Length: 109
Image (cartoon, rainbow, N blue to C red; front, side, top):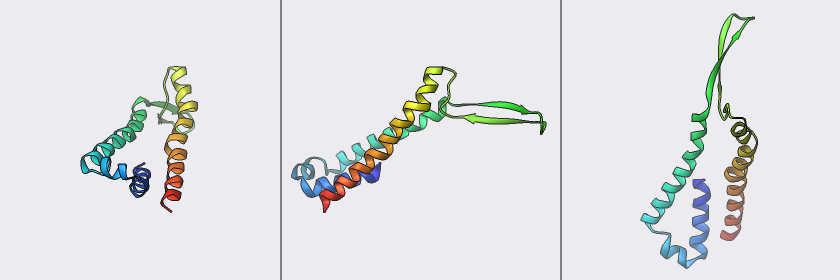
């Protein structure tokens, strides 16, 4: 995400005088970077809603512990993280940055 915003900043700095005056300032850049960092860290909270469960394996005689991330006992919440969240994550974290980087590269050229 940071690389995407660096590419966006570079393209805007080359094309826009307003961006040079208003956004290309250290204080504003630090604020934007902090916001991006917080948004990226929100992704990590999903590991906190996971839990681990133990299963006894009769063939080995051992207890196996498995961590289930993105899982909840609430069926609706579990379905959200298994289906909708995967698509949202794919679009927001992969397709959108790729599209922005390609567009900014074309603007830079």
